[in-house]
Length: 88
Image (cartoon, rainbow, N blue to C red; front, side, top):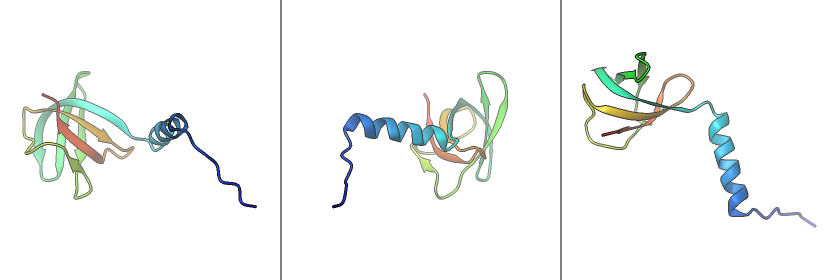
């Protein structure tokens, strides 16, 4: 006999949320100070500047993002942007 667990939507949602929090990703919001190649330099509300690296795996949720745009980025523990979108 093979036991197959049955998951409710609530259980799956909790597990998905737990998985996202354990993979080291977090959100960065701020203003783009400048762009240099695939790197976006973003100044947060706390005044700290963070370098976000993008590549072909980054989900760009909006068109072109440039200096002066406010953005929200989901990044991993190495500041690689998993997704980035305009926050205006």
